[in-house]
Length: 183
View (cartoon, one colour):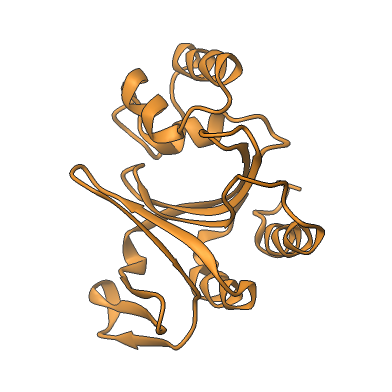
């Protein structure tokens, strides 16, 4: 396992991750990371270039505010003990505290999140076959500095192909926030 998540996994780990992704592209990235003993962010970084775009996490607030335009989305937060899935919309943003201890709040009728932006290490736009049915999913995923998923925002969640409007929304956010050189 690569202990310094700020650095890419070793070549052998990268190749091992890529092989696992090729063997089962539908597998949940968190499961694959656990099986391979690597941080989940390394699985995301090993995905094919046409499936993942790194976003500028330094623009986290602007990126989160852009999610409001999507309307209802599927938000997933996982830790070592539980996975919480919510269906709601971003909006009613506020900040509490200052500096490293600041919370950025999302408080709508359907979504109540309190984020600590200083812990975010990376963000990605991800296109992947859904683990249940193989139908293409579109998501914006945020990762902690230590490499585990902070939260994931799914514009589509399988079941049916993404409608053209959702694809356009996803592409607009991806293109607007892509790290230079990623698109």
